[in-house]
Amino acid sequence: MCLALPSLITELLPNDEAKVDLGGVTKTISLALVSDVAAGDYVIVHVGYALTKVDPEEAAKTLALFAEMGASA
Image 1 (tube, rainbow, N blue to C red):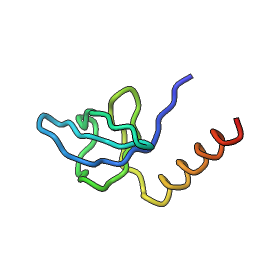
Image 2: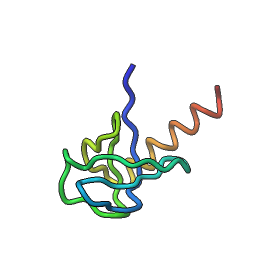
Image 3: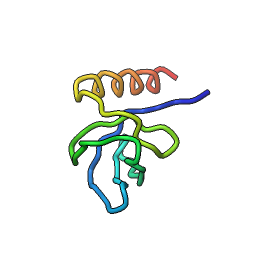
Image 4: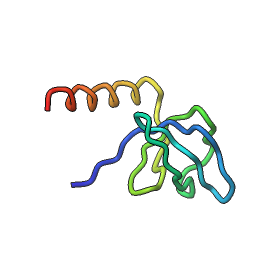
């Protein structure tokens, strides 16, 4: 099963990379597949690559659903 999650860009790095935060976990990802993103934007991340930019409200809804699923597990 594959899972792509919304992550908050916290810092842009050289070479089309960025640091993202997902629930307190910080990871360096590639921005090679997206353009026009900045710190503070949400992106969908899958296997270390940002696939697309996401509306902040939609990202919040998705993250809330994942949190709810984790609380009921």
